[in-house]
Amino acid sequence: MMESDTEKSTTMERADRYMFQTYGRFPVTLVRGKGCRVWDENGKEYLDFVGGIAVCALGHSSDVVTYALQEQSRTLVHVSNLFYTKPQVDVAELLVNNSFADRVFFCNSGAEANEAAIKLARHSAREKFGESRFTILSMDNSFHGRTMATLSATGQAKIRKGFDPLLPGFRFVPFNDVPGIESALDETVCAIMMEPIQGEGGVVCPEPGYLEKVRELCTKRDILLIFDEVQVGMGRTGKLFAHEHFGVTPDIMTLAKALGNGLPVGAMLATEELGKAFGPGTHATTFGGTPLITAVCRAVLEALLSEGWVDHCASVGGYFKSRLEELRQKYSFVREVRGYGLILGMELDLPGGPVVNACMDKGFLINCTQEKVLRFIPPLIVQKEEIDPLVDTLDGIFEGMK
Image 1 (tube, one colour):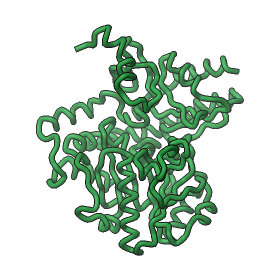
Image 2 (image 1 turned 90 degrees about the horizontal axis):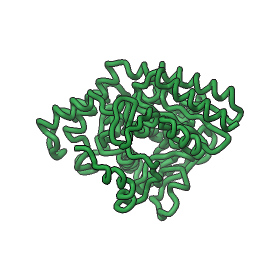
Image 3 (image 1 turned 90 degrees about the vertical axis):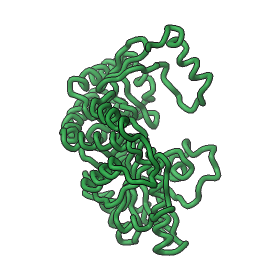
Image 4 (image 1 turned 180 degrees about the horizontal axis):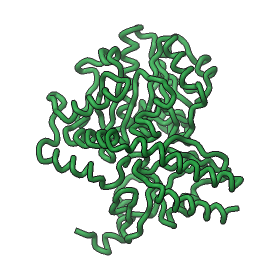
């Protein structure tokens, strides 16, 4: 049933009246999506280069997702994790067979996956070393979530502000700074937690050799390495997992976002040795890995692996980056273009918000992070024919800003 004109005109007003104002929303009410396109309540079409913030890997209203939801909802939607369910085991097996890991824990979000990783790291260290090892090193400008533990692990003061006292036992060092890590290591450190590529931090990529040296340090000091791949995992970079670009293997990895293509899911993956530290009763969640959710995850992961979307991401992402580089060469206020696959950042010498708004007026949804970095994280199914109009639109906007 379609909304009446009255309901349409008051959607934003009602949201402002009844909902917590925790988001700075754009004045647009989206009602429909298909592929890389979404439509607002007035029928205006937008090409979506935000993708739910790197979530909708297979696009909006994907037939893969719709079919999985329909089929599983007819049989079993939810039971307690006190029982086995086949879709959950299927996804765990797929993840293990296509990663470094031996064990998977399912939850409901990236923040929960990172919470689980923090708990596993500390619990494992407690069993192995006693009470002395509990500190986790995290990176400046990192983002790991908004629960109290993941907030405490997030290296952005603006996000942590106002929530003191935070969880103790976290220490921050600069990204791409091996000496900084070395100077911060002491006998209390049990793990280093980082995003292989910082998404919310501005699409900041590791310098050559950096992650390899971090891995060497962790191995040498018997410290766990945790990779938060919530935003950059699941094919986003042109590899199934971002760390594969650098030949570095973590001890723990977290996933979410694209794993469910829009449904709430998170996963923590770890080695067999660490799996032993999480026995019955050490961690749990009511809704983690329900049959309905994991049936979708299974379909999404199978599609990514079998339909060539990861390779497509690498190819079209390279094309997209080259087109953005053309703009960098043309406009002096474009400082840098960086990223892998379809997580690309364009850093400007001026605020990016007006560019985002101008693009939206012209029918393109993009994102700005760290105030001056335009971030492009479209569905992995995006085509060159959809990239070109965006780049041409940016060219026109930039021309007017000179």
